[in-house]
Image (cartoon, rainbow, N blue to C red):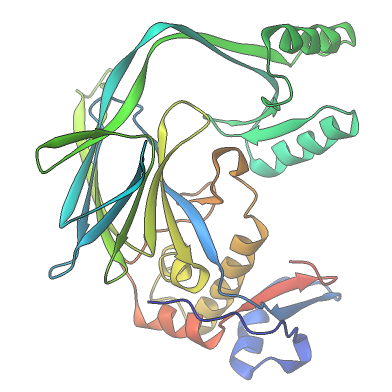
Length: 336
């Protein structure tokens, strides 16, 4: 699948929609000033499909090309970008001892159950002149921006200033690291330790087998978990803000929707409802691209964003709805 050049922006309002889309939108609680528009792009979106690779030393990711195809691996070396081809590659984790202990810390200004709540809080902190960023180590959090508050002295000065003003929720999240996870793979007998890897396939589809372990509980022993998905577009392994790695799927918006729509509403729902869900899903995706800026990607693949299963399970009805509504989004006062 290849991207086409974006057409010239051409916003079309509610009066122009087809009868099928109109029927679907009648299912939505639209306000009088709401409408829809044709987006000017089938832009690529960066999805964190495996967000915390390396949390456990047993984590593994096997990336495979489809039968008859091959993967192209690109990674940095001191001499520049190196390129290799392979039918598959297994990414693994090994603990990397540090020469001296590393203190990792940040000022956490607030914690939240949702991104929307965190973003509202972040805007309030910015209004007070504090530079912030939104993160999701577990719960959503607002951090004092690490690039701005980049020394122990400055971080403690900020925290003490807030406490002097009566703030009791901000705290310093600090830990001492003696080792960090290191991603690696073995190819042709050579081991490659790298923090970044780009992977593409000739047929533009890559299969990912994720293997990890679920910790033991009071009633169940530790057990191995594995799941397989197929993703269109390309994959990129990169470091995140929490010391582990994220596998990012870079995929065109309309291809992304093929892995979202049937899993958000159900593949065999009434067609008008699938059409409505398609427009909602496209709108949501394009409106929420800022969620994971701290980690250098845009959306996640679970219920914290929209459930996304890649091209693992696609269905004719949802594919038809995506094609028929290509580029359509909901707007309110000319905003997504």
